[in-house]
Image 1 (spheres, rainbow, N blue to C red):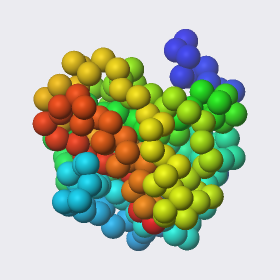
Image 2: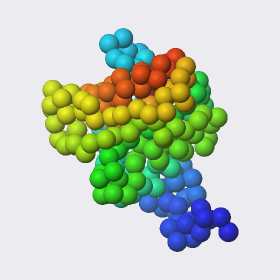
Image 3: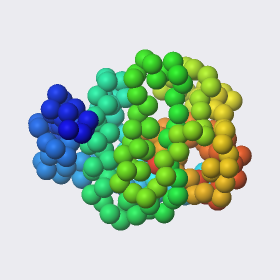
Length: 214
């Protein structure tokens, strides 16, 4: 028996919105709710280290509540709900598939031990499994544990995030079209700092994907 089937026996798959049993982690009724919230944004950038920002939702209402559960209440399975919903919009997913390599925003070792998972990496892995994109988790690292960005204002976030990421194995990303994946985009300071560091590998393009934009 595959490990995933064994896990499903112990923890049956449920809809991430209403909690009812559902093999897709999203029931039809709740899928319609998410459809009313989805905006599928594509923002081009000129003053950032990345070229564009792709996102599904605005960070408000039910979306905010679900993402907070995913990130802080140990409900890691919710990445399945988000990505399964993403896959239903083929036109938007095609924009993601134009990239070569997915790089999740890393978290520190201390934060990983506290949370038990990197929420951005789970999303990135699931997207990679559903496309031909490579998943690269051995290049970008967070070397310091800092104050959570959500607790700071814009100016404090910019200072807080500087110099906390390191890049190795640059050759893996040389001339690649990189999609940097995170959960929420607020001021953009985190993904912009990650993109700045990734630029050292001389990729051909860097885009950002997040579930929501604040």
